[in-house]
Length: 162
Image 1 (spheres, rainbow, N blue to C red):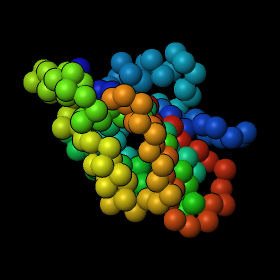
Image 2 (image 1 turned 60 degrees about the vertical axis):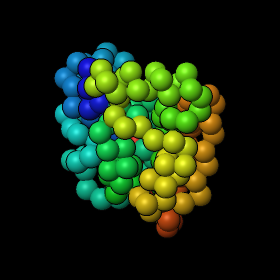
Image 3 (image 1 turned 180 degrees about the vertical axis):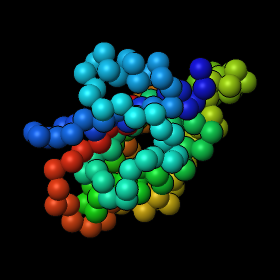
């Protein structure tokens, strides 16, 4: 399995919300359908087929560390966020312990992980994507994050990236 096969995009959240699942992998889209996703889209997280400022919320869980360029994925998620929108997610980060770093190195050698990054890298990537109000919540090798796109939010559309 490669980093891009772990990409998923589902947006839901609010009443009358539109549900979309996006993934590079047909098998991941099949899983999303089985879990109730109504609109599957085969797509790459670094080149999403949505216009700028489409979603109020994007969520990405446990996938950025698998991608060859996590910063590019975050820039693309920020692009599809509406002003005032929120990006939330989790990712595995390097630098939390020698044992975790050894596992990261092994996963990279097996081509299962991308370059990953440290918590500081994650903050820098989010900032470079134009996001503000960044909150990072480390817990072992996993770091949760929340960030906002500057501006005022007016719509009722949300997104989830898995």
